[in-house]
Length: 94
Image (cartoon, rainbow, N blue to C red; front, side):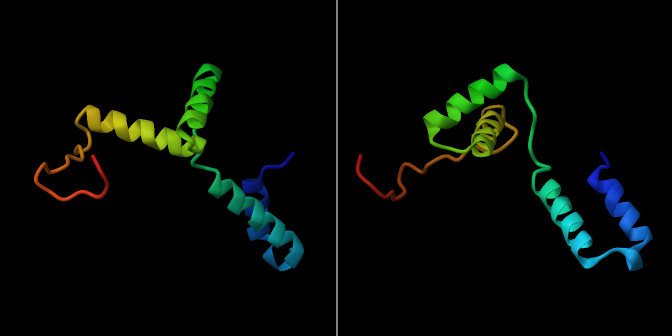
């Protein structure tokens, strides 16, 4: 099976010979690959734990990963921690 990137490179070399429909298919495939390129692959046990956590949090898989990484970075001083001002106004009841 030929990869999308190989098909696109071939299309560039013979752009005048490619049909519009074939070019559309290739560009859609490329767009999907780019859209999904941010996916992170983990070991099975980690994926299982992430799926369970995402369910508990009511978040998507990717949002759960973002949340965990942000929390870890804040706790380990790689990002500033969001501190509430005790004298500031807040919405809601305590």
